[in-house]
Image 1: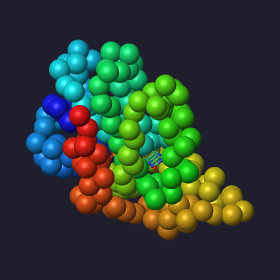
Image 2 (image 1 turned 60 degrees about the vertical axis):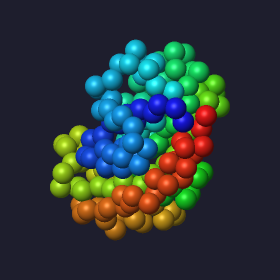
Image 3 (image 1 turned 120 degrees about the horizontal axis):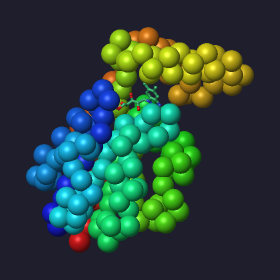
Amino acid sequence: MGNVAVIFKTKYGHTKQYAEWISEELKCDLFEQSEISGEKMLEYDTIVYGGGLYASGILGVDLITKNFSRINNKNIVVFTVGLADPDIKSQFEPIIKKNFTDEMQKRINIFHLRGGINYKELGIVHKAMMAALKSSVKKKDELTDEDRLMLETYGDKVEFTDKKDIEPLISFVRSLN
Ligand SMILES: Cc1cc2nc3c(=O)[nH]c(=O)nc-3n(C[C@H](O)[C@H](O)[C@H](O)COP(=O)(O)O)c2cc1C
């Protein structure tokens, strides 16, 4: 795995928690996305980037995509943190397509971790986005499990963040050259 940098961007702290656990486990450097430049990333053999999921976008992932041609020769691992259940793999396909080109998808190893939400903490824009999502879900004829979870927990607090879920990512990074 060589020398590893864990980099993250969070709005409400869930991705930061995972990034801290990962960097502690790997005993490696940890950076907030705004603290590290494309140039600095060149010092590492393995880059692990984590971003919260917002309307299918991976927060701050442009650090990786904009610098992709420079870091292409490194091990690149991305983890997303969202409310979507990581066991339902199909729902991540559009997210991966939206955030990465075909070439990037071949080179980047992607993991999905589950975060949480506390409606009382949300900023005004995010509150409005969740309200809009709720009314569109309520209009659906058939609800998915995710839709039901959203309606049941709307306005409340849900927490899925769990340290043991980093294990597959940790084993993968340790297996890298
Ligand atoms: C406005 C808004 C949009 C969101 N969009 C998604 C999404 O597209 N997919 C998903 O799985 N979770 C989505 N979430 C849930 C967040 O990804 C989840 O709260 C996550 O834990 C946030 O990570 P952070 O605390 O590190 O920012 C959304 C949350 C908000 C408030």
